[in-house]
Image 1 (cartoon, rainbow, N blue to C red):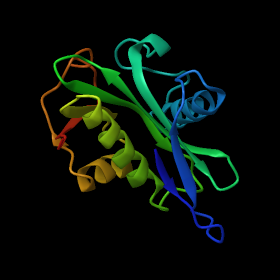
Image 2 (image 1 turned 180 degrees about the vertical axis):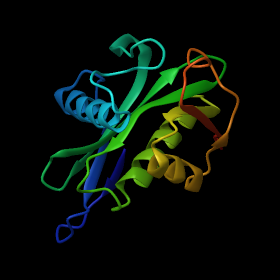
Image 3 (image 1 turned 90 degrees about the horizontal axis):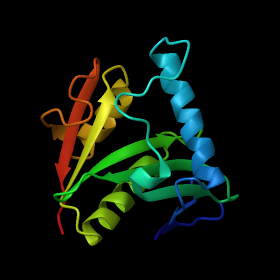
Image 4 (image 1 turned 30 degrees about the vertical axis):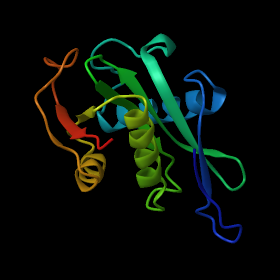
Amino acid sequence: MTERRDPDSPSSWRIAELPWDHPDSRRLRHAQRAEITEIRGLDREWEPGPAVTATDIALTLVAHDAAGEAIACASLRDHGHGFAELKRMDVCPDPRGSGVAAALLGAIEREAAARGWTTIRIQSDERLQSALRFYTREGYGPVAAFEPYRESPGICFLGKRLVP
């Protein structure tokens, strides 16, 4: 998959495909959901649309640091017609700003294109301004609302056409 190795650098990482329900991806997703729940000011987890399950996910990539600790994850849900939805893209707080998010997103885009998807779309909470700035910087732009989130309050919709 993708690998960046520099034994003297704390920003070394390895990106590999793992199952959605692998303990590393599960731990990262739970931490992401807790962070979003806190940002939204809720007393319980909130999910726009139906909850994501292992059967919904076609691809999960996880980045590990030089010590082997899982530090970032991203998944794709196949919506058919060449369209995949990015789900649960998250980087742990310490490595944020290291470039691992861009490397992970680039890896998932390349893998999506190789598997025949032509477009990636994202639904994200409008309060996650740093995430929205990141996606915009990486070439994602506004797209029409898509199911099953069309009626969800506080959601922004972004997309990017993939180059084969």
